[in-house]
Image 1 (cartoon, one colour):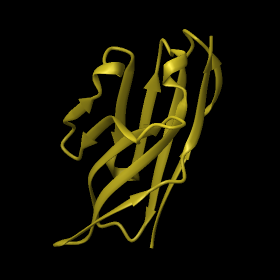
Image 2 (cartoon, one colour; image 1 turned 90 degrees about the horizontal axis):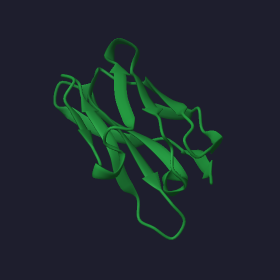
Image 3 (cartoon, one colour; image 1 turned 60 degrees about the vertical axis):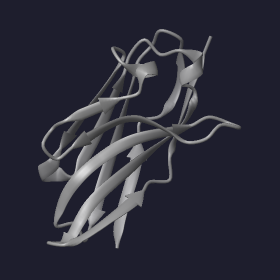
Image 4 (cartoon, one colour; image 1 turned 120 degrees about the horizontal axis):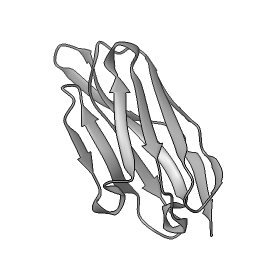
Length: 120
């Protein structure tokens, strides 16, 4: 069993900042990659940012220059620093972890999500 738990969401005014954290725990031999997704009401879930175990990062165009993803592989932790927040960033933010349970057994788990609300 693997658990993924997000924290750090909340209500912030436009232009403000928030830092999200994600902790993956359980039967994890090693992390392959972790990512943040978000889903706004009535919209599909979309990738916000991702980071591989080697440190390669990917960002959605809409957050480039404002959000920074980082991770601590030794502790199976993931972070998302969000600056210059806009009302359109309002969504439930989900953490996803791709991990090896053994050498060839790759699996994936999602957290329950944390709400981020940006007021104008």
